[in-house]
Image (cartoon, rainbow, N blue to C red; front, top):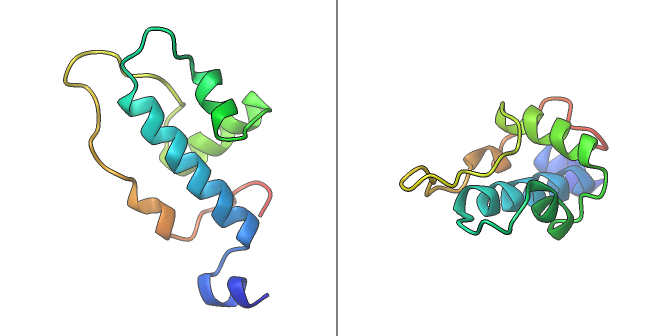
Length: 91
């Protein structure tokens, strides 16, 4: 209750946003041919890939994907983690 009053979101939603940001970082930074989007999702405790994809798209405005072209990686942590999400599932 206090968490929600202070941050405007539930602890569960905050945790999901943090895990989505970590998954995004892994997807954008991965240069291994052996890594798949599903591997990253499971690493960050998303076992339902459809829900992972939907939540990722809601937060970042794009589908989760790996960027393996040289120079295509984003070197930034998404600041949206600190913003109040719009209709995040499970919050």
